[in-house]
Length: 492
Ligand code: AMP
Ligand code: MG
Image (cartoon, rainbow, N blue to C red; front, side, top):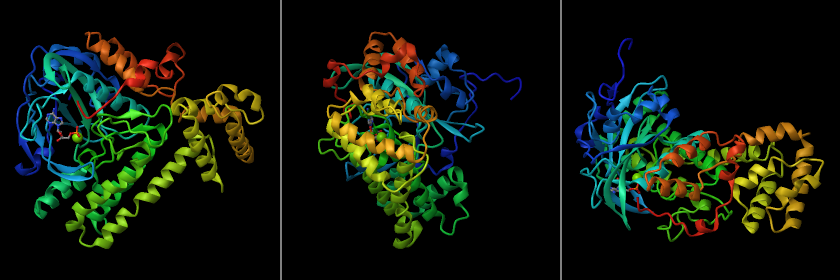
């Protein structure tokens, strides 16, 4: 591309998804927003698609990423999908407020650019096709925070805002987030054709996904079974990574489950603070279907929904079952690997499960702060229990802690663990900084007063979640009293 300067206008967009038959999507233009302005951009996300984030504040990019202008080569579209919501078949859903602009070729493969909140589509049902600034900031920050934690996720390139009023519980202002992923195909994209009894379209979609995203599965004895198995393993490993940082998605409906095993559709998510395995982060989820402790088994349930949808292609129930059976071992193996790393253990030993269970029981009984507990655990010294004080003081039940710490020390001694080396390794897997709800809330409230500096500051901190960042210690602090009343719901 020597000599060609990339601008918002000549963005080198293809649209591989548009090669699918028209039944898979509707071509449409985004709906312009009045006087859009720049709110935030992610430099690492921009770099992934060869863009300079500093330029995204320029007028032509603001126009492009708010949906007010469309790049020369863009063929925007919204995709159709269906899904199970809270365990019930919901029928057709689809991109009710998401518009795919196209994809950009990168050394790591094509990456799709999608506007979220760019206006009504044929799949909007009763919705307005818009997203409010509040939820856009949450999605933007969390996407980038999860990526920095090393967790598979869709990315967020930028947020553009507008003073356009949007009615939710109150009137808020509109924003558009540009999301990026190799694909936004969901479990529900397959369920759509299964429940419509359209095996031909089902096959077209599965072949498209295999050929464009999982080409290595083409040579499998049964590529559709291999696709299901791969989706199961990726989903299981992603959820193990969620559990290991205390992330709760909040709405694990099958229409929010990525066929690539990416964390997708950030809404009423949360990071665990005072530990409670039954914690429900989504205020709308009264039954706790998507509580922290339920996430692993809900992931498996969702894989069953995908397996059901792929069954006509796989051919035999036994083959689908065999693929689904890969979920549990994949989850257990990943969880064990992550917990060993979180405790700085280099080997696997009999009794490790009891050690982990004992730790979670202690965390539960003491409602200890998830992130800070694991971070502090890295400071433990094998031969110096007297140095435990800051860690020990996080718990009310000090005797309980002492009993557990005795086991942990014995376990560390058994593998000749070296304090300094272990701490360095633990600090690389136990983040100091996560997107606590109150931190997002502060950034949101400032942004609602047209001050976007806190978004940029939080983003910079969350891009290095494992670094100490001494000048920003207070971003690792427990939630203040006012934050105990914060509620997040599906309203976005
Ligand atoms: P979610 O659970 O937020 O991922 O959304 C479920 C479905 O509702 C999807 O089909 C979304 O596109 C659609 N949806 C959510 N909010 C809106 C909105 N404001 N306007 C149109 N569709 C929406
Ligand atoms: Mg969704």
